[in-house]
Length: 359
Image (cartoon, rainbow, N blue to C red; front, side, top):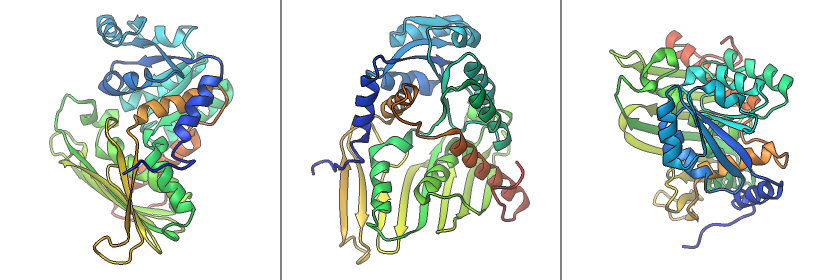
C-alpha cells in the first residue's frame, strides 16, 4: 500500500527545508551520556542537515570521551558547566534524570543556550513555572521533548479529527506499558522523579490535550506502587475535558504494549504503535467509519519510515533559526505537569482533582 500523503504528513520535510534554508545548522551539545541520547537522539539528529552535533558532557570525562568517539562528536567535556559555557554551542539537549531537568535547563538558558529538555520537563508544575521567567529574561527557546507531537502519523490523525473525518472527538483510550524492574535505573528512584506516570503516563496525557485542543477540567487517577522501590509501577487515569473524556492505563512493570484509539461521533482512529514507532518500517493508523464491528469500514493509512527524533531535532532547530515555533511550548509543558500533579493528588486522596489546583 502506498504511503499516505497530505500537506500535514509532509510537514517534517517542510520543516527540514526551512531549517536548512536558514543559513547554517544549529550547533548542539548534549548534557549527560544517557542511553536515550547515545542510542537514539544523537544518531537521529546526525541524520539531519539542520543539526550539527558538536559535544557531549558527562561528570566522568572518560565516559564523555568514549561517547564522543563512538558517535563522532568533536568535543567532550568532563562537566556540565563546561558544556553550557562553550560559546560555540547554540542549543542544548537535556536528557538528564528528571530532577536535573529544571536546574540545568536554567543554567543553560542563562548562558544563552536554547534548550530542548526531555520529558517530563520538571518534577511538578510549580517547578516548571520557574522556566517561564528564565525564558522571558533570556529570550531563548525552551521546549519539552515530546517527539511524538511531530511524527507524521500523529499530525495526520489530528488533521483527520479537525477535518471532521470521525465526527466530533468524544473519547480517547490509551495504553502504554513495558517491563523493567532495576533498582539502579534512574527511573526507579522516587526522589529523582521516577515511576511509570512520569516516564510514560505523561504521553497519553499530552496527546489527549493536543487532540482535544483544550485542557481537562477534572481528573481521577489510581497508582500502584512497587513495595521495595516506592515508585508507581502501574496506573490508570480518567481525564474529563469540556468536549469529552480520555482514559488510559500505563505501567513500568507490565508486558510491553502500546496503542491509542480515538473515538468520534461518526468513526474512530487506531494508532497502532503510537509512541515508539520503529524508524526502519512504515507506521500505520486505521480509520474506521464504525459501520460494523468487523472493520467493514476501515481504511489503513501508512506512512513512510521516519525517525521521530530526527524530525524533533529539525523542528527545534528551525525554531532556533526563527522559521517556525517549537512543537511543545513551556506553557504547554506546564499544563501537562499540572495534569500529572492532579493525578498524583487524586491517587493519594481517592477523589477527583482539578489540574488548576495547587501543585
